[in-house]
Image 1 (cartoon, one colour):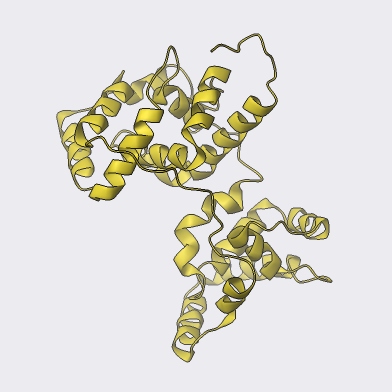
Image 2: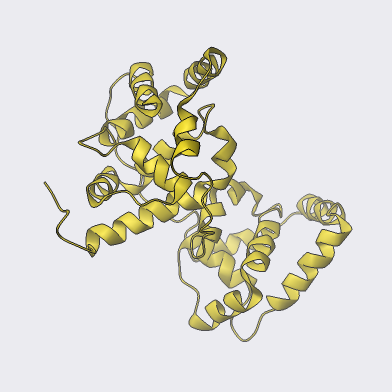
Length: 267
């Protein structure tokens, strides 16, 4: 399998070394650190005004409609939603009702806008899966069978692209990824290609695979899959899979904690 060859290539490119797994820490700690995000300079305010002025008119009308749906009621407003995204502190049930009432697309687009503001834009690349994790589109990115199998095909030029990409990963991050790849090494019928197949086709991996996923740790699992979607034959899906990677983690965590059947459990 090409994915197994890629795994071998990564292991060859990255010298072995150990590194502790990264905790699923909040992006901002609640309290003073979160409150400090309110501080903004005149120059930053000018940046925000310029950003808003350059939103396409039709999209601006759509966003204004969405913002009306997300208007604060009682103690629930957009700032509470942003606080959950950044600090992992859950919003109230009333807030959840408001979020659902606004509709999925309105909720996503409104939060995308908020993370374009100067004081929040440094978190933009880290929050997409947090915004999406409660509601994921079930349409597969690739159909199982021939379409998925065709991803194995790779030209010499594409292989050169992959080698170049690997050679330009920062050294410390290479060491961390190599450690993660060791944790995700194929055992039996479970390997990274099976995980990628679930991400792209929505066909669930086995419980054995879920045990492997959870055993690797969440951050290792996420970073390993981020790497895989930088390879030439997968990179076209990179912008679409962040929430699906998180969904696979959530499903496997639930499967390991409360298995749907104990018959397929094996050690």
